[in-house]
Image (cartoon, rainbow, N blue to C red; front, side, top):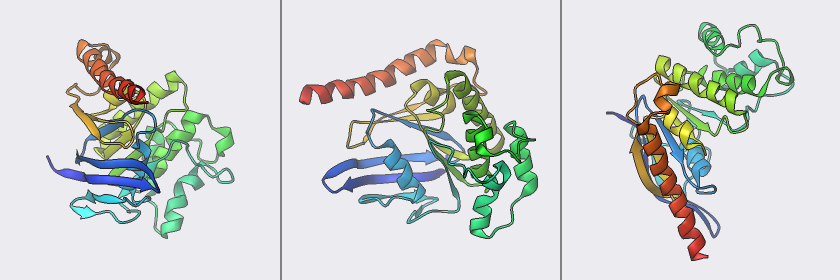
Length: 254
């Protein structure tokens, strides 16, 4: 399988604070890879380094074999918050990246995405008139409207209620099945990671390193029956044991 992103010995230090250390793994093209780990283990730092928005102290991130040295037009980013501009309506928020790039938007593709995520008819609504889930759908459309080769998602559904979060997970899987965009997904939810992913990478306590890397060999599209299977139960427990084991070791060392 072709490697889309290669993270090689990634390290990040902020003064005396070491967030990442010798972190290495590959992201195959057209897959979803989730990253989980203890709070503060460097997940978001790693994702921002993949986006080119943060420089690494050591190592590198390669996109199709070329080192990323800054923000890249083929990499989209969905943040923890929707980050919609409050004075612009939904459509103007989606078109904002095209204005910055002085590029012509593909309105047919944007209309398709809006219809796909259930936002057709809301183009003139302002962020304050949209629910949290609708705002996050808009941020996904904004990122995908540029047709990125890689989509990085930084805990995008963490602030949503459980029902809306499940709906958003299904939506991401459906969009991925249609576009096969390579996705790297950061989450604190092991169940969410398993539902969405082809692989789940587990990081250690800070400084973050790869502790384990699990394949998720489940049929798609995934259903409630899939997620209640013995295979998912066993994988969830293995990942929890990795994370909780690290936390126990950290407490013992205090």
